Image 1: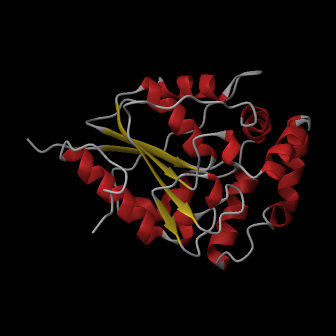
Image 2: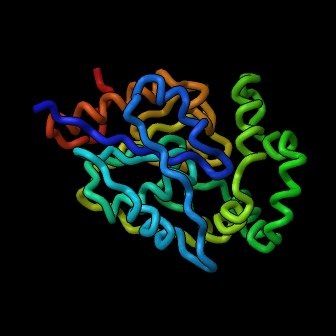
Length: 235
């Protein structure tokens, strides 16, 4: 009987399953769960625990995400039989986020939800910090932001600054990061692989490197080997 691996990836805040199109092309088994509605004053850990209840993986589970999605996946891994976690332009602590952005997120937490809806009309300016993106990636980012759940974004602005996770312990974590990430600077994370010239959305701008990491992780899991630092993707 052929063994299979479940692959679940969560998009970043303000993004959707469309973010993972470059990965779905190579991994047809990829599943991207829909975000659930956050509860009032819910912690990121509590939200992730509820997200995990809807997951029914078939075979060993490789769980991961981009940016905010990686943070949620990190917490979800505690509640699932997770074989490995992959963080793609994400982090294991709120302290990895650029301090100025953590401050802005606190301000954002005080902004009424309808304001996030109005922000969608100025989406091109909201995503301005992501300069240098290829036109097709930039357009996709704007479209996803305009379609995003305003309530989820408002809640995340409060939940992320309060996130203080404990290590996952026995669950292996593999992290790939862009050298030019302006949201979560590479210098503030302990990534296994730094992709030169890549920014925050490296799964879209550098899919070859990200896909290679995912592919190697899944192979390690299927072979029953622990994903040790430095082994995944090594020649």
